[in-house]
Image (cartoon, rainbow, N blue to C red; front, side, top):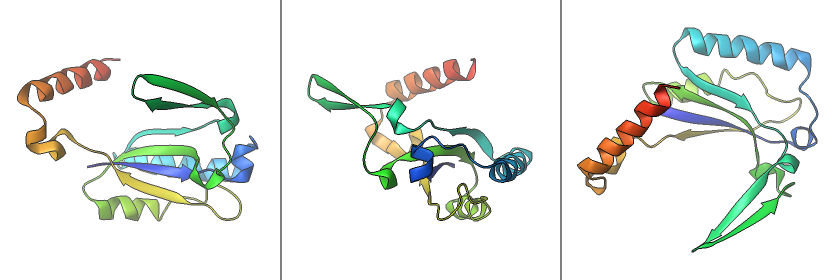
Length: 140
């Protein structure tokens, strides 16, 4: 099972303030533990929304909305992608995450869909195409 673990943004992360060295050190150690345990698939911090954009899609119409975005609590400051055996294991790892910011922080844990989750809705042909795409990604 794969889980995306999302670090929610704060006013400081949205202002582009760099994390303090102690937090960076603690995160580095935690990431090393994840790697050693074979859990970590990816981990990245994200630049503030002021450097980003959103794309609103309505039928054939595409509208670009430049950042920054007002609702900090709805924004993402970074993420991990973990592979674990259960939701409970993901939660156990999440409870060990060092505080990503000074003060209050929030982390969201979401399970990633697997092809098997779609059952009969995904045809064999669609499944084969998806597997071929994933194989191409894996070759990079």
